[in-house]
Amino acid sequence: MKDTKTTVLTFQQCKQTGKKISMLTAYDYSTAKLMDSAGIDAILVGDSLGNVMLGYEDTISVTMEDMIHHGRAVSRGAKNAMVVVDMPFMSYQTSVYDAVVNAGRLMKEARANAVKLEGGAEICPQIKAITDAGIPVMAHLGLTPQSINAFGGFKVQGKTLEKAQKLLDNARAVEKAGAFSLTLECVPSALAKKITETLSIPTIGIGAGKDCNGQVLVYQDLLGMFSDFTPKFVKRYAEVGTMMKEAFENYISDLDNGNFPEKQHTYTIDEEIIKNLV
Image (cartoon, rainbow, N blue to C red):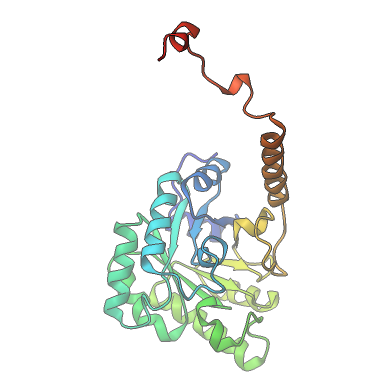
């Protein structure tokens, strides 16, 4: 377990020293506390909560109120991990003013340490304004789930020369605008390596190969707790979903068979009190 708070300076030091940055999503106090005690560097309160927590088919329906609610819970459990909270769909695209106001809400109300927003050159004015307001920004390029309708589905990004060049140009743009780090999602590993080597800020990969400066995964994917779909880039470290289902089934069975609750699970009272009840 770490005993120092991860900050934007920690991210930069990792970039310089070659230490990989560990990042996972979390959406509640208990999970964040477990991750924090394990020594995770950063926790992303992702708008992926729309899929894995709220049951939406995409992230577009997630609101600012959703992000604040879950972000606040995570920040209570994360004492040392940096807490990065996603800015949800249409909380920053509408105007620079809206972007700064909503980023400020995530810092004040959700107690975030940084915010994350999707997009390249087209949102650089928002990135600059948010960072000018003293709020650290993590950028996000490649497969940006809030633009899933424009992409036509979950597809690897940057596979042609034109699209690869655009990704690299956008990476340079968000760095220049002031982002302290960049998430690369579903990007060919060689392109992610090129971007990582080009930028002075650290990259966080999710389906972007091992040459990024760090990695992030949705924790329900990592633990086998979400089965609606499993991306190619996910590695399962435990089958917690299976264990949970078995535990639920055993609980039901114990109730049916009279094996729970047992004596050690109950409280006692003086029998004389019961006898004197009328």
